[in-house]
Image (cartoon, rainbow, N blue to C red; front, side, top):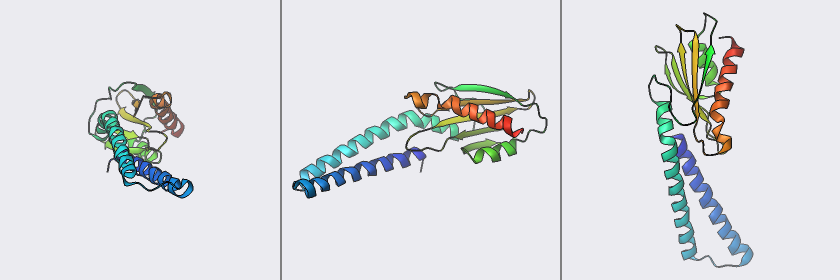
Length: 178
């Protein structure tokens, strides 16, 4: 199951649970009757809000997730994409070692050893959608190209996550002396 679908299903059940808990509290504490029309109306509204939420998420995230999980050699062209070039002066740079190190912190979604391309994303949480990064090691130039973009740039917090992830990966590479 795709990560955003898991969150949508979780969101639906959290809303449903909160609604049912509030209805039970109203019955027990306020002595209100447990009306079937109120329950049905509440559940219908929860389903409608979940469908709207689902539609917005799929419209927003599907192209971004499809890109980061698919093979391809071109950097992303999404809005708010931040590119950074890291010079690799060490001739013994190991793409496999970089992969092994990044797996500890990120969800690596695609690797092409031949082209020296890696795609990864943050692990999703309820508080942040995170960012995705395209990594291409250009051996001839001794450059590691990082192109990061936020999964959602609709909020101030999320808008800068691509830049933050790009800087974090660059500092990890520099500190490891790969």
